[in-house]
Image 1 (tube, helix red, strand yellow):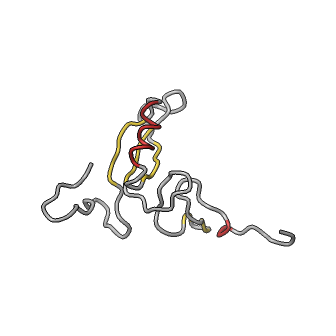
Image 2 (image 1 turned 180 degrees about the horizontal axis):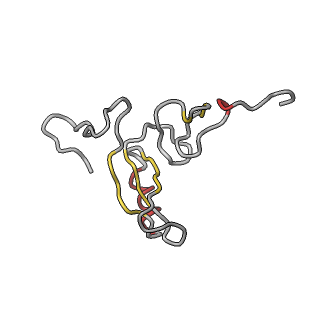
Length: 108
């Protein structure tokens, strides 16, 4: 488009898929699956042993729908190290994720 300048709000953060501003991503973190805009519920911690030191962890975020497929993608390559619940927006640091229906165990 002639005369259109790209501003930070025109770009998407490569990990979160949310618009980025001068101070980083804008809005709640989203699933890392291509095209998915659901809220992140899981953090998939991984590293590529040919590129990273053993203690280095990179992170993909996943919604409930894409947790298994993203985990499998990383696992078959030997990259997946851990899967952790991702804190809900507004949660206090160190807070436990919300449990399911009353009496139901939290899913892992």
